Image 1 (cartoon, rainbow, N blue to C red):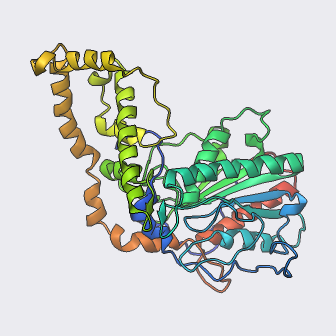
Image 2 (spheres, rainbow, N blue to C red):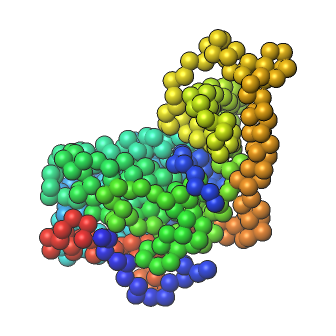
Image 3 (tube, helix red, strand yellow):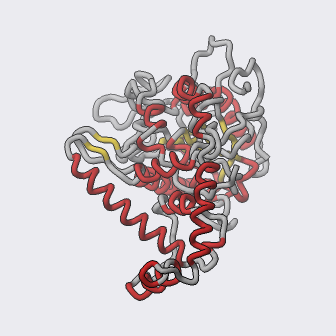
Length: 434
């Protein structure tokens, strides 16, 4: 099991429906855009090393990533805090409106500097955008997440090839990066033991402000908020990695502590997450909207007609639309040619809308849709009645601190201590995940 988080100082971070399928997080263009795009950062990562002009990247002196350390932190930062061409070992200057995971990686290296070769870290290069651009085209949110997943797996594969069993990994993901690491972890946890990168290669996973946090799970070893991820609060299946996953979540951080049953917002963001918004080319947004709507309609139709029992099932049309908004989710390859469409229409409404064999079933389904819609969106009221509007932004950016004189025990400090404990276990030769 995962080593416990040590509780050294007062912890001020843990006061205090229906199961949904795993679908893509589309914080792309609404609430969480405010949370990360405008989040304050710092001028540079703490303790950054130096490099003479032309001498290569700025690598922190305590970063053992290039020398196959016992423990390699693979960190995926939040929105706007990375790029597709980022150097994974360079401590870059941070923009003022971005959050960054340097408050975990650098202090973890410094805390283990007495054991050279113990800890190293790499930052995952990926676009980290919400599809929002000013004068240039940028990837959509969903494309950005997909690129982050591919880049994370590429780093794991490359470092496993280079270092073999000498190095194990800790995955760290924040906000958008939390979704990236969430997806990587769920897939990697079900790999066979003889895979190139297997579950045994992962010492631990920490997800910070994760939009897929299961409702009510612990936050760094203490009781967590009762809500769950903004896009899904279902129990997560991490396979062999289940006992090595930690979550960090603050109350009212809407990314990881959102009300249940906010389906219409999920759907809206699912659509927006497939679109690009560029001031220099507004027609592109219109074209994207047309493409997304037509594609989702075709995918929804294929989903429905491939299931003979769909009209009698509890799955609503809203459920279907939320599911197919994740363009990485496969749908049946259903033949929807003219003959098949005519067959469906004749069954549902009959020739000339006079009624068909399935008309009573269709009408009952539509009546149930109305009641189900209210139930699926009952949590929207909580967004207004509870202090999400006032606290969501603050709580989403308040995980980070590297001030040794601060009396409070911040999440980033807890994570550093947890990683240091994992590093000690690696040095002492503890069994995988123990």
